[in-house]
Length: 130
Length: 82
Image (cartoon, rainbow over all chains, first blue to last red; front, side, top):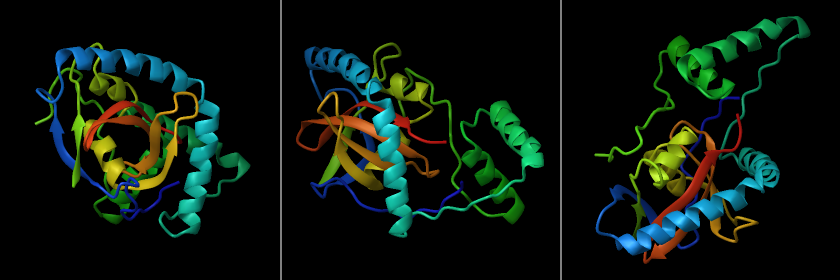
């Protein structure tokens, strides 16, 4: 369901994220190769935790909703209105959106003529971000 | 003090190509670091991790390491819910 969000916490160190990417020259090529190897291993490990991470994510969202950090809008549909879900999924599929939430955001933005951040899929691999 | 991010653009092994496969951009992940819902630890890998929000309010899970002072390398990141 669509949610509105306010900027919330930051890592425990209290450091603010910086948007400027840092690519070359930050680490040696040897270190970079090490990181790539570590990354492969870490991704395999993390894949084993999918269910636990999904459960924790639901918990995180519920806590954020309870704390007023996120707002959850609920849409109720009757059993004979399943075609609405099918239409949502079809729209998402045709436009490369990955969730019903994203379709509803797009629909609300158009219906209400408001600015809502949209997903921006398709960052080309291998191209450096300007 | 601010975080810097090491984004590896290698099309085969880089972390940018990896997160793109999950429908994310470096900007999405960096935004999540500014909009943290929970800091945690990846259970299997033992690496630091967080749940955060992308600019379009997707909840994502990010596993990372601070490889140098305020320099973050992202191992993986993906949206955790529809």
